[in-house]
Length: 269
Image (cartoon, rainbow, N blue to C red; front, side, top):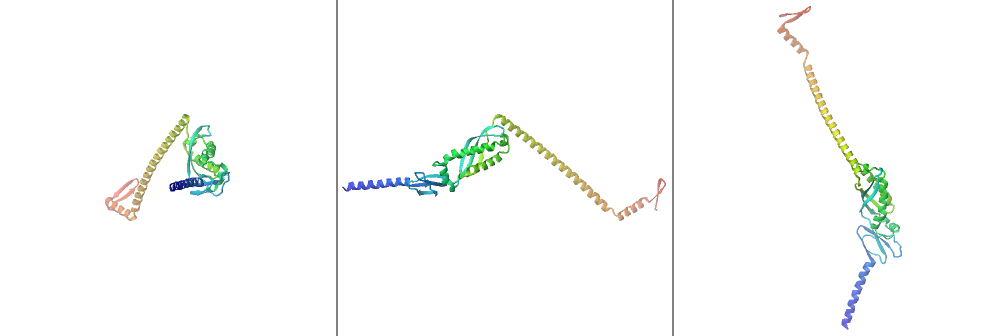
């Protein structure tokens, strides 16, 4: 009798434990770090108050979680066409997060689907549309020879505006190098070669200019030195020095008298 009662007590405890575990899974929801939860009832009613990180009691309601921290998404082989008629494909990487104040409205807009489903569906189609529009304004050579950053920045601006009204905040867009055909590759090689030749010609011209400047500087310095030397000599010739030189000449050669076309030197005069 006692044994039977003990078995019943044990079974009761096990049943209570099982019910508690089931209740924990059914009545509580664990919101992951960096996410918020939107709570909705089975009949489709959505609660405006969102659930933050942690274990939350939700009763019989269901919860869909949305990321509010930055997510990096890789969209591969996005087809684009450039203004010169080149059709190609690029890989586009973008970083986004969801505005936590708009998650309830987002649930009402998209329904009970995950953020991954939205990324593969609505977000990807918007990215495709904006990428085609932006790159249709550039030639393939523009993209490959200097204007890729400009196009990338324009895509970021356009894509951000296209999705922000739904609560998606795009912070960065990176576009990979487009696939190109053989003809385009030859054009690029020619541009690169021409650029290298131009750089060499520019360097040669700068070298010649530097050499010419150095020679002109040297000539100027020599002229300045010669002028300074002449000035020093001129400054040193005083009236007394001239008289002294005349006296020395008279002492050595005597006086010089000019008579018609001839000169006569007279001693001692």
